[in-house]
Length: 75
Image 1 (tube, rainbow, N blue to C red):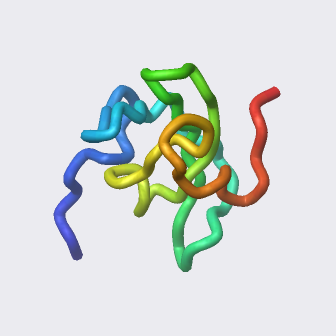
Image 2: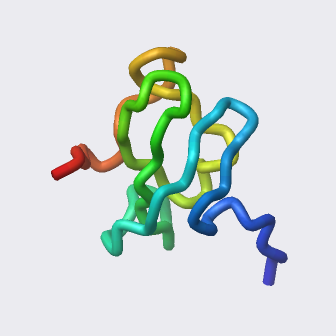
């Protein structure tokens, strides 16, 4: 089994300024993945990403990143 790099823990911030807010508890779009709520520290945008992508995501609003995974939007 692969060792965790901590990228799915709450509070993790990647090099692009995207912070993991919380697990969403819903299946992701990649095999065996779950979705996580991410927030951009630059513009405040909230979106979802597969756990396997949190380390590299860029904001869909201000950094040209991919749209929210699975069509998730904040409540």
